[in-house]
Image (cartoon, rainbow, N blue to C red):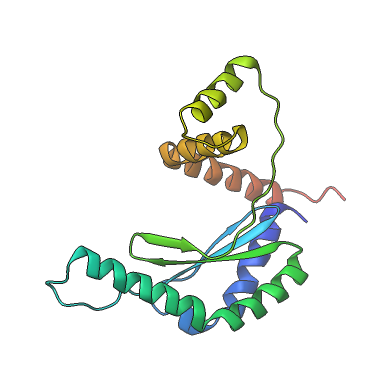
Amino acid sequence: MTDQHDSSSIRSWFAGRLPDEWSSSNEPRLEIDREEITITVAIDRPALDDGASDADIAEAIDGRIAGFREDTRDRRMAIAREAEHRFDRKVAWAVSVGERTELFTHLSVPVMTRLRQPERQVLDTLVRANIARSRADAVAWCVRLVGQNTDEWLRDLRDAMRSVDEIRNAGPDTA
């Protein structure tokens, strides 16, 4: 089974399995990799008076997120157990309200790499400057920074890879 087919199967299963009330305004977003499936449920912003301060809005959003997390905990855990058994991947949950997204659970997967001295010096500089606590934290910081600054390029690359997978899957069966 290819990653594309697997991703499609996972998306289809979740489309049928997630409660309808969790997608009243927006469909939940799924991010899938080899180890983890992250489901982000978009919920509506709390209704406040037009004159509400930024601090009041932030508090209301915190309350909405906390309420969703607590109110849906049992259902999310049951769905995650089913999906983890079915797809052999961990399931993580997040909720978004407007521009804010809060991740409830997630994996932290170790990644091994070999770096030459100039690359290690970059990491060591970040550690010495208290940007990161360790080389591992510095690598994670660099990956986040690259991800933030290349979102469009990475999105285009993923779309291109998806197109290649679709063409490959539509080709003749070699079995």
